[in-house]
Amino acid sequence: MRVPGIIHATESLVREMDAKVYEQVVNVATLPGIERASYAMPDAHWGYGFPIGGVAAFDADRGGVVSAGGVGFDISCGVRSLHTGLTVGEIDPVKKALAHELSRSVPAGVGSIGRLHLDTAEMDAMLSGGARWAVERGYGTAADLNRIEERGCMAGARPEQVSMHAKRRQQDEMGTLGSGNHYLEVQQVVRLFDPRIASVFKIREGDVVVSIHCGSRGLGHQIGSEFLKRMAVEAPEHGLSLPDRELACAPINSPLGEAYLGAMRAGINCALANRQIITHLVRQAFSHVVPRAELSLLYDVSHNTCKVETHRMDGAVKRLFVHRKGATRAFGPGHPDLPTEFASTGQPVLIGGTMGTASYILVGTSDSEARSFGSSCHGAGRAMSRHQAFKQWRGRQVIDELAARGIIVRSPSSRGVAEEAPGAYKDVTAVVDAADRAGLSRKVAKLEPVICVKG
Amino acid sequence: MSKKAPERQSASGWEHFDHGADIGVRGLGTTKEAAFEQVAVALTATITDPASVRPDLAVEIACEAPTDELLLVDWLNALVYEMATRRMLFGAFTVTFEDSRLVGTAWGEPVDLARHAPAVEVKGATYTALRLARDGDGTWVAECVVDV
Image (cartoon, rainbow over all chains, first blue to last red):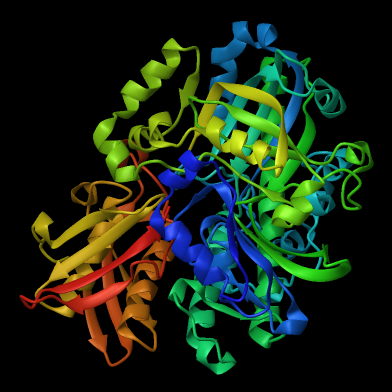
């Protein structure tokens, strides 16, 4: 190990963690050019090379690497939350109609296609422009861009490094939610932990918000698969001896490393554009059912990325390539990359739960800079496999039980709902409490689902 | 299509194994080719019941990799790609090897949401728990975790 491994969690979360988490944290700590520590967030679980919930930063000038596994297959998978300007009392009478309209408006599930078809030129423009491209095409407003990491457009994207296969996979998938753990939820704010910060975030108890969880769809997956293979095959040429093939990586300062960074940044833009188009579709759905709704973006965070950031190391400021695999950026007050309105508070950190449990809004802290390169957890993490969940629950049963609690679930797949049953996940509250106690981010508000659209 | 879809083998030719967030797929066969064919059935079974997929259309697939294990991941990823871009599901497969090259055929049909009720999209095959080997009794085992 070149640096220590640090797992931020409570004793009970550590005890629940898969032994593979420790192994993967240790493996990441052996990679060239790693700085300070190999970190795991409180929701860490067995991932691909890196643990899901892993954070590691590399210095290119010290032989540092970039890893396709360290970013993950669903590049820039993330969450955005929108205010609606409505209270839960205002949507109660139209809940069913709203659920129907949302599930009709946002394509979700296997084989679904979006309403856009991108030709070669538009594909490249989207991969360069991200959410900015989407706003220029009429999907959303310029004000949205200020509430997205990188102001909605990841610099340094190189569409020419994205294969034709990846582009072909994406050409009909813009504005689609996907499947698995991706969702679109209408949620109510049920509790405020920090009224001062909540007021800056413009969140009040009883408010209705919408959260969207999805990523870069087929394009990101294809980029991940292709570069993983190239990095695994070329590793010996770079003198890299890897303890796990899935840790496949390349020196940042190498043609392959640079090609991956260019393609991965294009993948980030794809995810940002995708969430922006879905936001537009959600706004349309709300306008049909509740015309007085005004959906403005609270914030958009990405989970699976490698970003160039400056961090303070032993008194000096260094430029590092920070991998966050299933981890959320959690910059604290005064960070120069934050929108002005969050300069005094830190950034919103959006943590998704399951369709039957809570989600949370937290705020980034100054302490997270020294404890995790400005990172926090990203969700609950699974407690049991899909196979086990499918054996334990039936989709209809999950939908009926949630309906009895006032939660409407819409999904084209009954088996998909069973595999995503709330009981298949860890306790998101325990994860969030651990992140709060570790100082990685602070709790601001608790949300509970009202409507959940699943793929 | 000139070739005929192969008869379905018994369910014992494939199985799933647990992985925390995702799914492990395993193919078993008396030959390497059969293990590759069966692991493809296991891939489909993560999405729907393979028996529900009609072998109406054949799609030819070719891939190449420096090792057999990498070729296994390439094979599964080629199927993921064909499923995604053609919006199809496949239920029957044949595989032959020519040195480091795999030539295969996948039989299937367009996704029918009502009949197939697909549970999940597969994002890609991974190198996690990747293994291609012959067990003590000579059975070929082809397996890895797929990201869903």
